[in-house]
Length: 486
Image: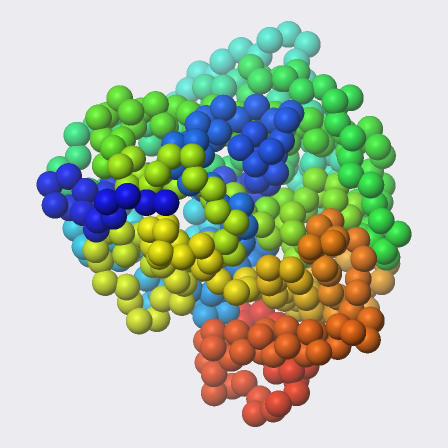
């Protein structure tokens, strides 16, 4: 619960914001989310000093659409970004632009998935170009003898075990790692005097495959420590073919690499938190940590996102603001990452644009309510797929009107409509589809109606939607990617 809520920090201004996003980070690989193996003391510290959201969801289990959604407070189809790589349309306003107009100094450091220059959205950007330019000036540090390094990431060209780092190989020495470069740049920003409030957005490349980590972090986790999740009988037909060649040992190695990259990520988060503490501005700075979506580490036989199972769509979300957000709080309210922009604008006393579709979390944070949404929704264009999830139920619908182009084809890859229903209260692992049970017919009709309502309300061009009461007709017209209609 929050105490003394105010739209202003010291000096009558809004709080500073340190906004950290980790790519493909699975919240369940984190101590504060209950993992006994993961070593994440800094994320655990952040959670203990603020609030942890246990049911936070992305709007798309794919990085570019998810990021363009949570940076604008609008849904992927609304902003016209449902695939990668697709640039954000010029007319769409990010949180960087909105806060810059309100007098904030806005910086973006690291990964953004914009696919266009960010100068129109942020005052300053430090990305891969700046990193590679810097790396070219370095003489290169020596690698210890007999240490094999991970090569370039070549998905779909190399065997899947290689681009998922099943051999758990390091990438480079710590000093030359991209995320180390970005961490140091962000820490320098935090250590400098700033004349006014700031938004510092930091995007980490880990924990995205191939789960890179420095040489200094090698051998932190033994593959033998891990037991990959079992694959259910119903998963076999839907499991992407690319994962069928993985052996049990491959899966153990992938898990070891992922956990190692998570420990490296946590180290970098700690550097930023320590730099903020040294700056003397920690008490007037909102810190947010989250992932752009989740990631599956063997559940249902998959090592990916690109679908609507819980591990793919549930994101981490931690928030801290001393004196405002009470320490050690947790909430199981259903929230979406699209809610972050209106929350920040609300907290900073900045007017929320009428076209923002997220809902401010402030009533939830203030203790005025323990609930936020009755349901959450996510979409994945490459499989013409969408989900609607309530407190208990999840419906996953695919229009069956699009051939997958993302590489994750299955043995049952046909252009046919499909519908699955899971009782999350009694089947948290989503192993039993109960859509064919007669007693669930009315529930399915209700959930489909909720999906249709969402599609109509969030369409970029509502005039193009069919005038039909058939939910399948409406959903089929909405789920193919907006970009394909340009």
